Length: 292
Ligand code: R5P
Image 1 (tube, helix red, strand yellow):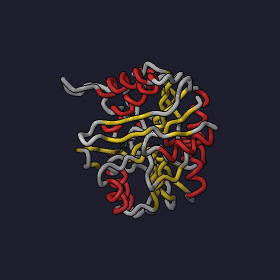
Image 2 (image 1 turned 135 degrees about the vertical axis):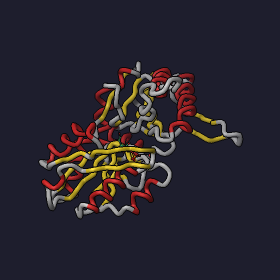
Image 3 (image 1 turned 90 degrees about the horizontal axis):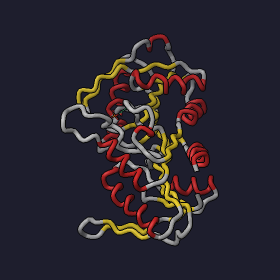
């Protein structure tokens, strides 16, 4: 791969990846016509292996222009076109729960697989799929944020107790906790609606005096974190440090989380956000090198 293209909003990570991989970084010309249609223009790419760095939060506004861009690159003679999507969208709907529902994960995977030769992402939100290979027909590589999160906790939190968002996260939080010799627990979560979450924290009395560290793969509405912070306050525990891999912070999520008064919020730089504190450049560069 010998050219990185930075999609708007992913420029900072694209620049640091360019440095780590010793690959030049350019930006395509992108703008919207008054009627909302996308305009795109690429530079000289004849014979070059190109990768676009585009985090796919707010995927509906990004995907169509991204497909146009991949097509334009091929039309201009790029030898190959890959996608580095630190956050990969549309994994939630992985089956039909009700008759007639669109299984958007499959359609999205088919669209991206038709436009790119390869895909690298960070901790995709897989539930019923075991791997991206079940729905993506191109080569994919998954980078894990757990080692960098563990290192960040070790450097920044005294006597941590790592807490995962639900029982499904047990393997993930136990890996983070194990790497730094910390104990861990998982929340028992009941979600009654998008913004209506209730949690309990079993067995937390076993670790008095520890600093709770809530670690989640996605902070979307922020309500899981807010509910956990409230529960910890009821239990008269220290305010927690909140860590998220993907800082989606939909609508008022960031304000809601700040209002709950955590000790600190730290996210990975898969989606650009003021809370970014855990740099995954080196991990992503290693994942890209392995695949390409
Ligand atoms: C659940 O499966 C995830 O790990 C997160 O807990 C969830 O996506 C967080 O969502 P929210 O921020 O909307 O509570």
